[in-house]
Image (cartoon, rainbow, N blue to C red; front, side, top):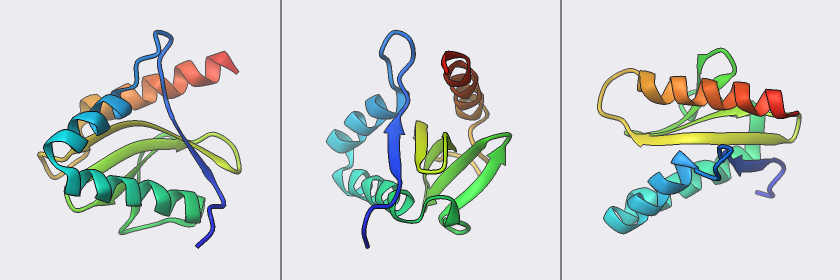
Amino acid sequence: MAKSFDVHFYEDARGRSQLKEWLRTLKRSNPRAHAKVMRMIEKLEEHGPNLRMPHAKHVEGPVWELRKDELRIYYWQDDEQVFIAAAGEAKQRDEADPQLVSYTLDAYREWIEEL
């Protein structure tokens, strides 16, 4: 399927990206999981806001999570065609990691302030 939406990785004011760092670590430690995460991102690029359970779930405020097995990516929709992915994890518990959700909410607020 053709790519209809863009997914950008959030970077803070210092150029740091939790998601990029996590993906680099994941690629070295678990290439299969890394490939799975990249397919999750492709699915968001293909389906955008039409992506729902079991692939995407609303978490809090503007924050959603991409889901596949234990893998999660926290993101928000920036405009009709663009999504911002801020954080990722290999989930350790049943619910979303509160620290990563908080990080993503803070990233969203920073992003909005810069517009």
